[in-house]
Length: 73
Image (tube, rainbow, N blue to C red; front, side, top):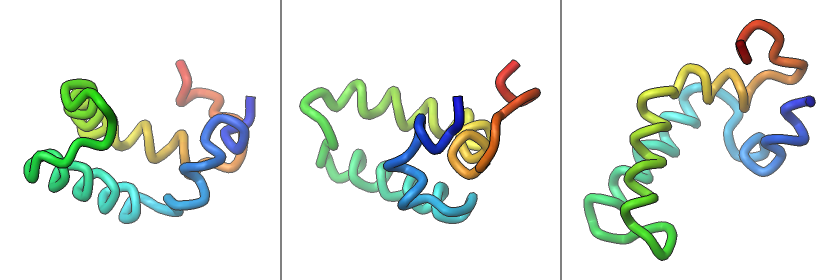
């Protein structure tokens, strides 16, 4: 499956690793200020932690314009 289908909304906002870092930093600031994104702040924290841990893979998933191939193993 092409990533343009999987990440079509994120692909419009995130164009490179710097914009992904900005998104993660913004989410961290919102969490520190107790302004959750969803109804469950715990899930927000879990998602932010996953994004931080796997930011290289996430950037590859979002920014790649073709099939992922070896990255998805």
